Amino acid sequence: MTETRSNPTESSRELISRDHAKVGGAIYRYTDIAFERGEGAYLYDFEGEKYLDFVAGIATMNVGHCHPKVVEAICGQARTLIHGASHVGYMRPYVDLLDAVLSVAPGELADGKGIFMNSGSEAVETGIKLARYVTNRSMIIAFTDAFHGRSMGALAMTSSDELYRRRLTPLLGGVHHVPYPYCYRCPLKHDSPETCGLACLNLVEKALQTVVPPEELAGILVEPIAGEGGYIVPPDGFLQGLRAICDRHGALLITDEVQTGLGRTGKMFAVEHWGVVPDVTCLAKPLGGGLPLGAMLAKCELVDAWPPAAQGSTFGGNPVACRAGLATLRIVQDEDLMSHAVQVGDYIQDRFREVQKELPIIGDVRGKGLMVAVELVNSDGSPARDVIKSLIKEMGARGLVLTKCGASSIRIAPPLIITREQADFGVDVITEVLRRHQW
Image 1 (cartoon, rainbow, N blue to C red):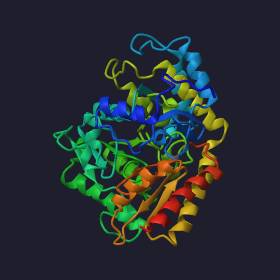
Image 2: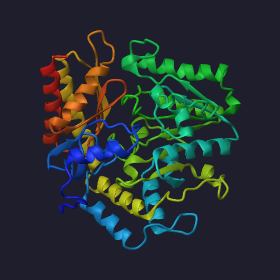
Image 3: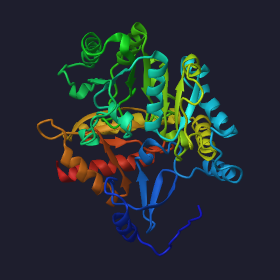
Image 4: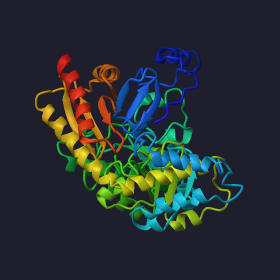
């Protein structure tokens, strides 16, 4: 790969210093690494040091960094049309990508329609707006440990960390949260996934009897696997139960697949693990192949009920982003990366479960495909918050890029192209640090 530098003499330290002087401190950095370039499953700093990427731009770079076919798609489109605005005229990349994504969507969504936005937050807000409009109802049920975005509407649905909401209320009204079935730390203190999931469903029903009039419920918004909240996999029956509740009360089931969608869990859409078809689903992260792009997909009759100009976006469906996304989707399909994600993801979980037998700091190992969490705990079982911060910072010095999810879980979401040998390196580095510090 040809290297390009705007300032070939600038060091990582110098860039970080300039960043601190100009970039707002609200942007938190998990690592102290300055990235200059990426290739495959690796990132490189300004000194040429190589880092295995266990983050993939936060579950975004599904086919790895600078995949030649994605780069070719971006360059080719940039030579013909960079921006036209979907409100002004029609663009082939917009239709091509939407057609391709709908073709792999579950159930009736395959015959549905969609709208492109720029991010996951916007996609979620679009889904909420559609639900309110077509049902003529105002209320939304969402879940604790959920992350749906930081814009004010999406933030009203988000509940994974109080920091995101601090000094920002009141937010969008009409949102009621109930517990997500986080079975390792069941909010209702149940001992089994089956009873935990059923209890959380019962609380949805209880909310509809007490604080959310059923005739005012527009929809239930849920992540099929809670992302920022800790890569929490719900027990079997939970999503099916939400589908049944929505059907019973004439509400829409809205799934946030921003982090789970397009192959990461070993299915194109995570809901497919449970055979559930939502009315509305929201996508982003890997959708644009690394460029900003979000989408809302919905059943045809719902989208057709929305009048022209009711929603839109100046940059949503940008042709360059759409071409990058189409190339990415084809690579996931052509290279059978979903099956690969299952094989390598299961292998990573198996390795950590073996380590768990000797390291009590590992409280839980969970996930699907290459969406894996390793939850760290203190001796009393509480979240090891200080440990996870120290661990992530130390990983950079050992050639591994890592982040967390939830209170104290190692987030493992590498590119779907990662090999077993690369996975071994990452697991070995994490294990070595955990052993050495004897936390």
